[in-house]
Length: 305
Ligand code: PSU
Ligand code: MN
Image (cartoon, rainbow, N blue to C red; front, side, top):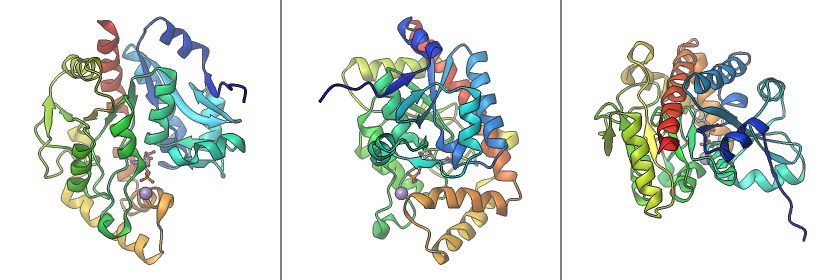
């Protein structure tokens, strides 16, 4: 078999990587399946702009025309956000969508792997997948967690959504050797809410100290991710108790409609957005932007020394 180059790295990203300049990877499932149009495309563009304002080059990742694309143009973002039939692509789906040239939006797991192939070390998202509530019988544990135990790309997120079992997700990360560090507070955040009721395993208060920890981990030869949890800004949070009511309802709807597998997370996000009358969507947008700023600042510090 002849070797094939599956990567299609945008020239600007390629140049930055060659010059050891900060690059921040971004996922595309959040665009295609995490938010409605047109807020999804609008947010994707704003997030890229925030990464730039903070000194790094954004590289949004997706699978298009049989290639693992690292860095997308506006037209590609628009297509991902406003077409039906774009696949939600996790790690297991990559060979199928590549060989069949299906348009695919990448999850945390597949984005991490492609970022790693391209040589990118820092990745910004909204929330990671995790251990679902009831996983002791459904075995629904996101491939994101397994990927984080293996692939050396740091993930900046707003913590873990309470549609998941936050306690079990933290346990799984511990088993996988993934450090979990919260930025600027002792409590681990719960995506829409600043507080989850769980203490964060670790805390750091500056992008520089976080970058230092990443360097220490990987220079020691410890492979795998670091989960950086960045609490949503206080002015934009939906308090945990209020969110819990909507989440319980959404989980009940999912059960009644027998939603499972890869459709569950998008279903829950959509149902919650509807039930909160768009409030959860504004929070989601705010926290992704907040993560983009922190991720870019970590990348700048990481690539400085
Ligand atoms: N959480 C969000 N928005 C999202 C996702 C999670 O708030 O869009 C997406 C991410 O791409 C994540 C994926 O990697 O859902 C997890 O899906 P699953 O639980 O099926 O592994
Ligand atoms: Mn799942």
